[in-house]
Image (cartoon, rainbow, N blue to C red):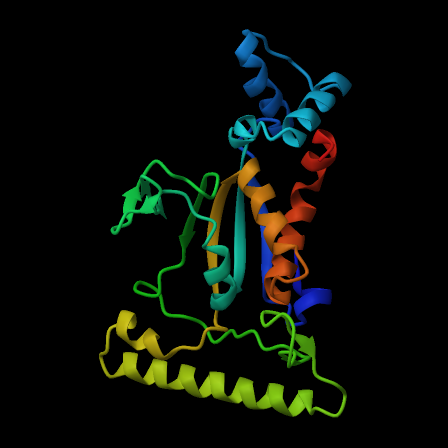
Length: 248
């Protein structure tokens, strides 16, 4: 799924679907639910669709954590820093005793807020980056009031082309310094520290169907940053056949 041709405009970033664990993800949701009654279906039919729609609508989400997808992303670092929030492992919660917050937060390895996700990214410690940068063709500004997270396109009086040229020049200057440091013997893990956040990297993302739906719910929202919305839309397009089958 090439997201760049009509969204980001640089023909570099992409999302592709690597696999779905060799089993129909929709049917797996159904059988994960039907195991409660020691039953199993061999095919996904209209009755199964009604079941999965009911499960999701009523918040019975555990069956959706058995179907997994693996995606391959190529995206700017700053996009990944938002995407990486969707991660499995542990979370922080604050507990209360007699209605009062405990003074120390407790690290709870059983508390998975993000529904089962795993990321593995290209390591800048081991490989030397390529000079590939995302720079928008249309620059945006923050509104003077209202939602501080929002951004809107600057009007035509702003010289978007000149600003894009300046930013690209700054990126390549930074990359030139990175290369020179490596040539002088500096380790890649140190030299990379001066690289900009719009440098492209790649990663694999393995995620449950529930995790996908959680990600899409948040990152397709109008308040999400435009760039990660583009990647979220690409993910949705790739899983749309499964969502259609499940009637979600």
